[in-house]
Image (cartoon, rainbow, N blue to C red):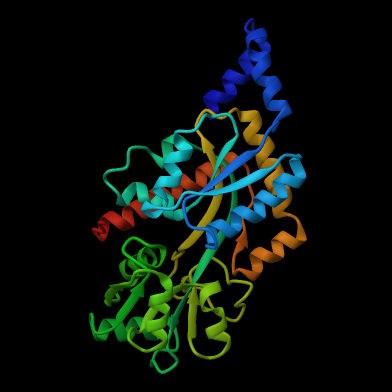
Length: 324
């Protein structure tokens, strides 16, 4: 992106300014036609819902239609590759997140690089999870859970929606930092994992706050801690894991990316408009209701964040020898 910026400035100021003018003009006029936001998961899911909120805002704010297009399959890889192969003109965007980032580490047969082939546009939300157990389970705090797990290695079970999922890697980070040993039970989706936790078939689960909230309020699940660096607004009385395990933090995230070499001026236009949307009280409250934290910033800040996440989870995945 720095190279693109230098090229842009050079064309604007140097002898090649006339050649750069049409591209600059197009960037300034952007958008002049409908824009696609590709989502790598089915309609109705979390990624899709976020994409539709942002698409509606951008359509109103920038005066052109932003259309959500679902390209589900291969844990988001089909949608991501469609964006990577698209023209870098700002008319194909990607609603992406921590899942797509981990895919680059987990899958060995991907024909593109999430980190190299996409340009960060705008971060949207951070999505902390909540560590929950059944109310009948003896542990009432994170230290008690760790003590039980250490005293009875692999006697307890920790569920996840699947190998390599956010709850799975969150557990692996927890295990590596505490020495707690539990048997990992991967399911085909979070709904099945949550159902078996409610039915006491498994003991522990790192759930999204949105999925677990109604059960926590109804005392059908006990929340031991949240995984973010700070306490979550929907669960203000629930401590963070980091309060007991210093340095622990595990959050999902969502953002908007574009094909690499998308003009800097277009990325900046989108970033400014998206950040204005994230500051809108209605949108902000929607995110809070979903158990999330608004995460606005510049494209450079988003890129730096993704690079740090890639390094962090790469180490966790390789250390745990997680393979698909």
